[in-house]
Image 1 (cartoon, one colour):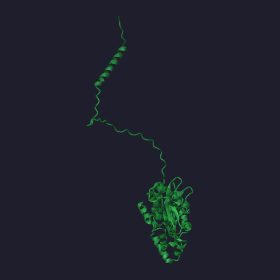
Image 2 (cartoon, one colour; image 1 turned 30 degrees about the vertical axis):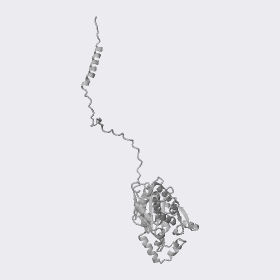
Image 3 (cartoon, rainbow, N blue to C red; image 1 turned 90 degrees about the vertical axis):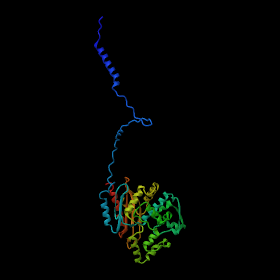
Image 4 (tube, rainbow, N blue to C red; image 1 turned 120 degrees about the vertical axis):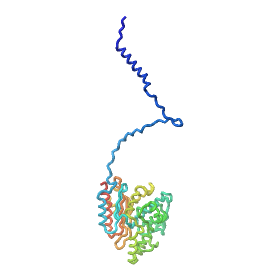
Length: 379
């Protein structure tokens, strides 16, 4: 019998044998796995390769750079300089961007009479004491005839009508700042521990060239050349006693005050203090928000710095006005925090140390300064 064998099946079988043989014999050429090194305690250490590079996150589009963050808008400092040079008398101006990195000033390091601007430091010292638990905002303070001061003190009418009044610290702050009431301020000053307590606050916060005087009664009587008497708190007794002084006495007292004001402060130091207040680095968040709110309700000086800002800008401030002598005013001031509609904030300080310019001219200067800040905003 003749048997025929196809070559294809034989070839396939042969190839299968080769492949199978190759698979079996490959064990002889594959090296055995290395034993992982062990520590002295028998633990196995496993080598770890370099970390994988993280996948780069998608970059969010950056907002356009704020041109006024690192430097003042071009032209603003020149404009302020022109206003400063053209105004008669000793004038100090400072502007600082609160949420930025720039500030500039004219006569920024000189000391100027603060007058009622210093009420701001009294309130800050009180709120700092509240933050420390030494004073309560609801704490009651009694005010009688012996506590009355002079000049602007609407509270005095209540005291005289009722014999004495009792007010909370909160109400006294509101009255002292928004109405610039001298008796309310001196009552806060007494409650917080007197002038030295305010000076300690200023030093502890490192506010720089900011002085605090002896209180309203001694400050004003000293500026006039008088020794304080409590009878001066009634009616126009103080003005009558001042008018009876020899002119040389009044001039000498005023010159001494202007040459070295006991309540003096520099424009740059005030602007820096306002900046730190707004940034929240002087008081607790609650006290900061409260004080900024009180400043926004200030009623005095609507035609000073406030008058130069557009209607959609916010402004919180404190004014100050000193005594007049021969047509010259020792201190005509406004300091505050201006907020643009986009939330950008500026500290603006204008202090007129002594000037014979008319009151409308003084207000026009202040309006021109704040108006320039608004005009150049965003450039």
